Amino acid sequence: MYLSGTDVYVTGTITNSVTMIPELFIAKYNSSGTQQFFTTYSNGYGDLGKDIIINGTTGYIVVTGASYNSSFDSDVSIVAFNSSGVQQWASFYNHANLNDGGFKITT
Image (cartoon, rainbow, N blue to C red; front, side, top):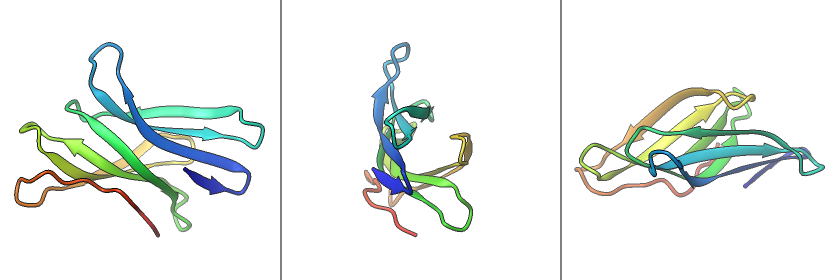
């Protein structure tokens, strides 16, 4: 969870009801608790959201976690979304084909 002014941003994992594959999600709520947006990211193998921040320079919502690859090993994932929840980019790190994951992110 990340607080920005009176807005709350949340990340986590939700299972796609059609594919049954876990997807990273982000949600934004205003000070009244009304959902402003909800969006997901999926690479097709499984994604987990663990921590979320707002980049003070770009305004991007940035999430770290883990993404499974085609070998079903997990990689560190960093996914950026604009202030409307539209994905801007995704980056991954795989150390020696082992299971990796991001748990905390900061600016």
